[in-house]
Structure formats: C-alpha cells, structure tokens
Image (cartoon, rainbow, N blue to C red; front, side):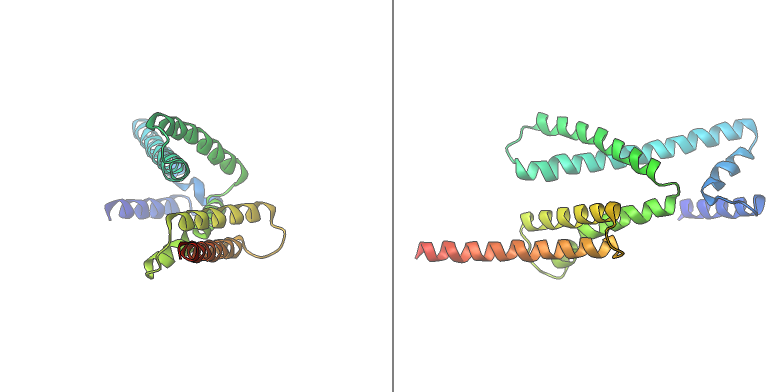
Length: 196
C-alpha cells in the first residue's frame, strides 16, 4: 500500500512539474533530475537497484522454471549439475530475448500487451480447467501451455491475418488439451482391451 501511494504521488508530482510532458515513460527520470545532486545520485542508484533486482528475479525465475519444470519433466533422471547448467544457460537466453524485445518495442504499454497476450494464451486454459475440477495430466497441462504460448508468439510476430494472437493461442491451447486427453483415453481403452 505504501509503495503504491509513493508511485501515485510521484505521478502527481511529475504531472505538476511537467504538465506538457510528451512521453510519460520518462516522467520518473525527469522527476529525479529535479532533485539536488546528492538526492539525484541516491534516486538514480535506487532506481538502478530496483531495475536490477526485478530483472534478476524474472530471469532466474524463468530460467529455473524452464530448466527444472520443462526440461526436468522430459528428463526426470537428469542430474542436478546438468539442470543447474541449463538454468544458467536459460538466464543468458532469456536475457537476450528480453534485450531483443526491448529493442523491438519503443513503448512500455505495447511491450506489456505483447507479453501478457503470449503469457495468457498459454496459462489460461490449463488453469481454468484445473480450477473447475478437471483433472489434467501433467503432460497435457505442459503441452497446452507450450502450444498456446508458442502459437500466440509466432502469430503475434508474423500476423498473417487480423485475428488477435490471444484467440489463436487460446484455440491452440484448447485443441491441445482435447487432443491430448483424447489420445490418453484411446490408449487407456486399448490397454484395457489388451489386458482382457
């Protein structure tokens, strides 16, 4: 609550000091530049610390998830050293992807919309199914997440039609759940028939 209040107050202060500001993304930096030299230094170091901490958390969280949850799912017997090495490699790869996205987008809001579209496309269908009581195999949930994420990512980049990438990703995620569960049910019936 206190952090939110400080952010809102900074926004109001920037609005009062720079009423005709063309780019709102620079408001916080311009606000920091109005401080005296010592305050400006503390402000910029604090801003850099917040950015570095956030980037560090996101990179390590994503890299650990890719190494342990995705790769570890396909290779459960993988040694800890290999998973740790993969996690470090994924930190570098995710950093490069982040850098490419930062160069591609000139504004924060389109970057957020892009990221949220890709993320929502993958995570929404498996999450809703689990929350409504549908039992999903871990494989089905993972494949659905990957199908939704990758299809919306490719669609967003290529944009062959005017259909939003979110709907493409949600469709791919849903179809993957249906296909995976159908294949599982078919295999289960086949195994039961062979057992008789």
